[in-house]
Length: 559
Image: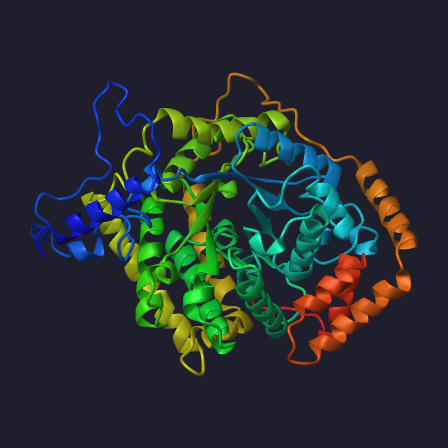
């Protein structure tokens, strides 16, 4: 091999530099020592298996997607936020952007996540509490009022009713006068992880996959920069999985979405870059870094060797990270600032493209403005003061990190084989569907969660303030937490009633019926759903019509 890899890296870096894609900032240590943009072995041939490590920007992308690392572009600070009504959340978004946030991430309340309107009897007491209430396109107009959707990347964390919510986002952009074909952002849409971990589905898997396939086709044709699926491992990890399970279950889901795209006749070189990922960053610092590095390597190899992707863009795994909500403690909550900083640093050293840092009070309630600012500043301190962005993959070549990366990759491959063996046709999709129906995924996660809980109870694993070092300077740690008033629900229901009275009700209902009729054909459902949204059909009306057509789903009992 000689020094070929280093030379290829140098050519890529020089090209980025010549194109003005390297930030012109200070690249010295705090003591004034100049650092190089990347480091590697003096002799590549002396490092066994070096092709599996390589340099940043080169297949299999173990060390990152770009030769310049964060010298080229820092990760996007994308804080997850949403509470109360659209107006309240809009104010928080403007604060985040004004304080240096680089993009938005929308948290929806439980009724919205389940495709229910705020005045549905099943929404009682839940409106605006775990996120923002969105009932129709008019709410989306308010949510992004004064925020240029054409110039702001927006992520939306919703899966069951993702497609109608996406249509509301498009209509809000249209009403702003934005060319929707230029929109850039991410929609979660990952229904597999709902059956595996989070449990927020509307229908059986097949109708959801129909909608997801339509969404993939629509975005590929009309909104090429938009990423219609964010395959989520975060919720799998929060449910109690191990790092290897999070990685394997998530990538397996991603492979199934690749199979869905191929089954629709889509070009993998075109649609694969629209698949992004969403990972948890937990507290075992080096294990998390290794997990992120293994994810890139596995994805690149499978996309090339199994699914036939030839371009680097189609082989590259891009991911957002959120620090581990499950690691936060109600006891001694100020410690959560430290936990979040460590988890954020792991995500950055693992090469994340964007990052949300949790607030110290999220274990108790939605973040207060002060806690949200501390979480934002955590990323900014890391970016501006620590020097970790100066060198691409600074831990590359560490014996420990490389061994952990190899081991997590090995565990993931074993899990892939088990999933495929459960299927009937050799596809990952078939294995996942069988695993969902049999309760295999939930059983595996439950067992991992049980093992960890036993370790906590025995004291083998320590959590400061919970099972060790429980003394506190204050007898009771007190926080001023954000509380969503019941008035939010009353106001939202009143606003929804006024909206229904003001719209052309006959046109709205006809548009919803037309959408259902299109669903009975092989036509793409997104245009008909957009028409329903433009007519101010509500989320509940759209989803209830589809429930009536497709039925609901109850997972099998497992004991």
